[in-house]
Image (cartoon, rainbow, N blue to C red; front, side, top):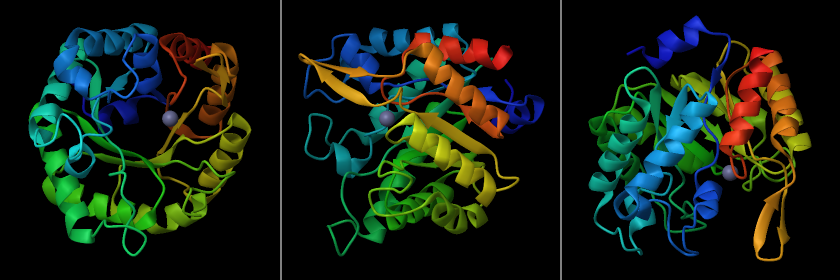
Length: 290
Ligand SMILES: [Zn+2]
């Protein structure tokens, strides 16, 4: 099995996967059910979505563990099962990916704001990400991904926790969903300045708002972080409600056109976030090969 570093060195660009949450909605997950619950309650669906992305051309897929830190699980049905859910999710991803594609352990924010805005302390945060990283590593992931972060303190504490618990390559990705800034006001240049010296394997942006905003964010990241591998997974455009359903306005070809341009400008790992289906990933694969 190739390592993340070997694979990255051997290809100009790697294709990751698309969304988890919005595809589970399409597959019938009940409103209010966290995707992580499907790791135990619908493991065939978890494997199935991984398989669809792999069939579409993904070189790596992310585990269904975005919300699987202890603080985030605390109030739900998986409270107290952090280690088990992370290990099992990694096993399901490996079942689907086999030995020739990579699996990446997804770790999202805790859902709590750092002090003094909220209750999140450094110690709680470092411990939470160390615990999640250890469980994902023991479950067999090839790399770890901190994604959709927006607060610098939480991101830095999360990196500290992960790096203290595991030697696996670590990707750090922020969501710039207020124009080109995060909810806490960070710019792409701010995050490069703070995170690039910390020994991460890649740095980038996921989720966010519109593709036009992501175009600008990628430009700023390329200028601010020369030489650091960029990870870019945008939403399939902007969501809007049609009846009871959320529709994302970028179809596969439109998303692929933007993502192909990010690769041309130097992004090394690309994929999609909310609203991106296996069809979107297949279109990106074709655009990258063209
Ligand atoms: Zn997203």
